[in-house]
Image (tube, rainbow, N blue to C red; front, side):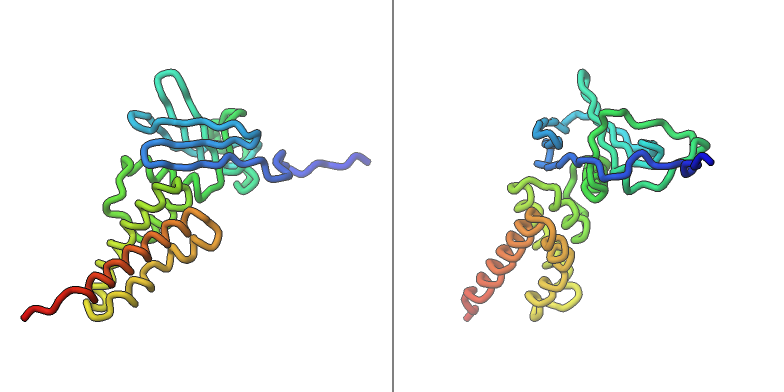
Length: 207
């Protein structure tokens, strides 16, 4: 008797090679699994996000478009749920670069915000720092220190500022466990707060 194959069997049995992303504010660097890399200028770039399918799996699809170039980034198919034919979603291009979901989310959010850092929460800044370049991670960390300082002031008051800041930077401490760039951002944030605390201690008393 012939063996029946599983319905909607996935063609992605093993994790597909990932493309690494690095964001330098208005420039995106892509490093492909074969060692090739590409520089993408995000200024004036058009983008679109949509649901799609790849290897019979649901994925999220990000399209970056320049006048003479198009780049497709998708979330890992091996992590997506099975997509039946009835879903009717477009298929992602076969040469689309596969990016880890947290990095894909951070990049899509950055593009949707117009490349703005203002108004972001500590958790959002921590997530962004994971895909940032070394220099951009420092900028993010310095901003996070300011945001954490304001939050600590509101919650704890001026006399307990340093302890409150340390607690508020928790998302960066969590991200730093797996991301070197988040660790760079955390160090930058702590350096800013240490410098601010030192300035307060050295401030001369008014007579």
